[in-house]
Length: 276
Length: 226
Image 1 (spheres, rainbow over the protein chains, first blue to last red):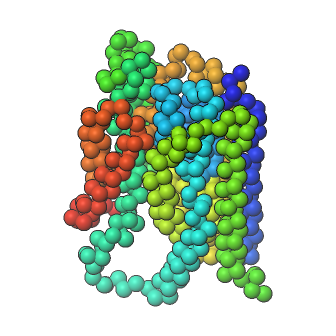
Image 2: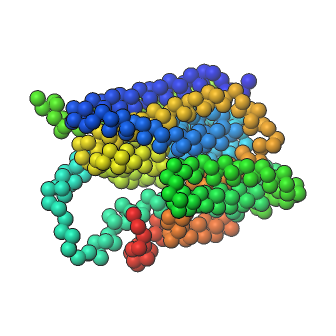
Image 3: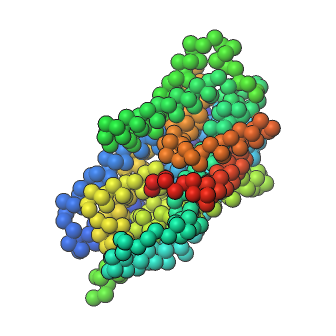
């Protein structure tokens, strides 16, 4: 039996996830009670629960799709824990790739991990790489939150002068850049690394799927085009329910396209990877 | 009594949040420890450090930026829960904003704090349930699924599919700042074709941030909406 499918590993993962689930239930109960104490209508609170649950389902399915997509290389247990606790679609895939590369696992995500030592190493790297926010949160969250609470109360007490001229210099301050563009720029750098590899990255000549080629370009183009088309469609026709489904549909359609083109194209073209 | 005032509720949330962050961190670290003990292996420390060296400069910097940027938007309870349960940008934050808009309350208000925490807690519970049900239902078929010759090309191309779909929204919204980093990374790959994505993303992030900063300072991003 493959060690990655051992029931004991599922039990370990289940225990960690149950612990975190308990925290969510605790905060939910406390916030609900406080909401009632503040006089917020029960129907309003119930509506927040219902709308959040419905809002979450499509995105949760895309998280599930990522867990399943990582499973051929890592099994289900590591991606399950990593995407249930702190995890994030982008970070986990990147972390898994970095860990495999550093631990000498050749072929990356295209090749299943069969060495328990590499498997455990990947679990360590993915866990330690992502946990920093939990280390700094106890120190930073309270002062930041209090500062903004005080600032917004002050703002409400003294409404802004709408006739004040815009200060162009202030508008382009470093703080303004950090607030508005730093996170998108970091995300684009991160996502772009995988996009660039799918266009021109090299792999091992004997491994299919680890380097850029006909199929990686087709998959990438289909994923981008389908996602953009769906996003435009959702915006133009005001289909707000469609928006959370855009990413999972784009990903699944692209994977289906990979299967179709692999079978339709002549073998030497379908398996062509220009840089190995 | 002071205990019943909202100020004291917020303070208590911060106390619970601090405890939940530390205990979640301990539970999370127990996961690789348990794997090592169960499989009776211990991976090479140098391999782990090499892997971490590629991640820490980016991930730990992003962690600081995220705590600073998201805390004002998520509220106290929402912040602690979001950082423990993850998927903030793509799930928890839009979910909290959606619930606060629906309830007509402002972030950083007493009501906003409550609604945001309820929304994020619900979202975390639903995500955990969907993942658990999906995985338990899927586990028995995984091998036949991934070993299926017909489906193999799809799993071999999972990264272009995932990042193409994930990136499309970012590229369309931030197309002005997207071209430069991608061109830089393509040039890097021309000279170092086998460079892994985890190393390449350093070049991407540095080029992306510096390029965006340059365009911002030159006023080329003034017309970009929030």
